[in-house]
Length: 137
Image (cartoon, rainbow, N blue to C red; front, side, top):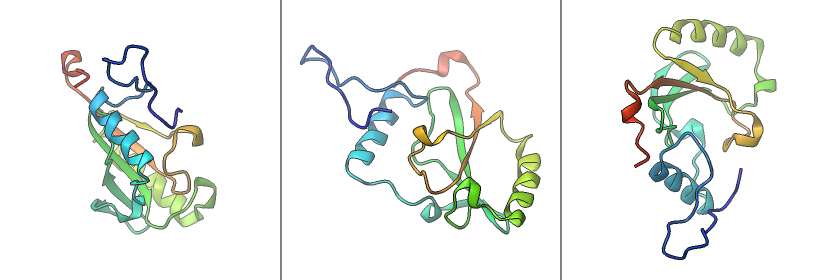
């Protein structure tokens, strides 16, 4: 993924943004936060719900183009997927089963697309109701 915003040829046009699942406005906010090194640790985000080893948080930079809800499930301790304990993995399986009926899909990005590479997380998402809601504002 491009680390910086590229300029279009026409100086009167807005900077060209990389393809993402965010609206242009939300992608601009995300890229600005990256450039300014203003990305917070996931474990510092407010919790929507907690289990023994896991927490559900709101995504600060949601995939807002097709989705109306964007939460992330994170281990309470900062750990990569390969560093999860057997207890964390067992609880994760139960939580995924529990959350399946509350969301439309889940995404685990590969490292190339992760802004929080050292902290495993799973995106839980609900689609917008109508295609017409997918404006790029």
